[in-house]
Length: 453
Image 1 (cartoon, rainbow, N blue to C red):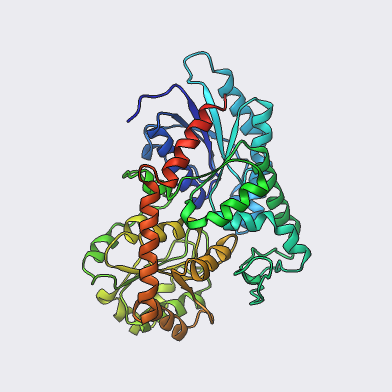
Image 2: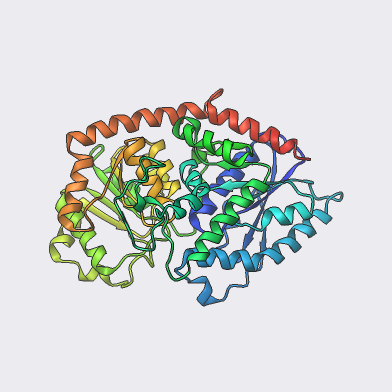
């Protein structure tokens, strides 16, 4: 552990699991490089300070009432957080700056989630340098930079559209891969993306949980279009090997001992992240598809991901019988550990960026079922650019699900995918080693922060 270098970093994560995780991982990485870390967070979905005893934590009021906090409209909720948090954030940051010169370690830099569009303006007024953490990949961010063009050309779908038409200007994307606009409030998504790009352009740099060997062409395009420094330091979860967890949900570790009993590379791990929700009919088809695949499966069914909490009791008896040894259902899993387990042969995923990078880092092939936001772009790159997974095409029907699982785990095609996944895994390992691209990017980031005074 380095000596503290008398510089404090203020981290401000967006209060969603997929944004908190990479921000706290970044905090652990930079703490190991000698920085003091203060995590500024909303009361809504606050992280657990006891999991990070070396960090200081400060909360700000977000002004959300119970109905607002339970909104299923994610873009709407992010917009609301931007509106409600701006003033309390500025007050808190101003107070922290005024304490400098006393016993408080001087603030070297603010690192904000890039979806908090107001933070750069506040930092500029208070004379604090601001970096952005973008919790998605380079490809999806580049798509957002050309979003106005895609809209103008008629590519941007309304909510629910999954067109198979190719986007000629950006192969291999299909129209259905582009984040959809809710037809009821189309201006919300457009404004969020406009604010995102504006915040990045006004920042003194962008940190990404990716690596050059994975997304070099898109990183090159971003550097040209946005004209700010980019620091691809990922896979960040591999930089900070620690037992501390930033999960907002309790992890069921019984799945690890269950995996210990399964054959090598035989298990399909199924998890659709911390936000996706499905109907009871869809969940039943997934259950029956898993049963018909005849493969062992570990399935995460998060509280709130199914509208009817008693759905398990309604499953046909043949599925429940199949659970005897061959299947396990948990409410939440220690995902990084699960993906690293030798029994796991494939990951059926929503292709959130954290899940995608974690799967790539362990060489685990993916069965892709994107739901919203950047997931369509991520999934298309998994299947058509890196070729380490396949799309679940044809809908959520049990026969289709069983066929897709066998395609990845059993068929010859799956073997080819596994070989490519292992090559990519090796690149992810090499980039973090001394002299590797992410190692150099982290060195450059530390130097950049220390020069921001």
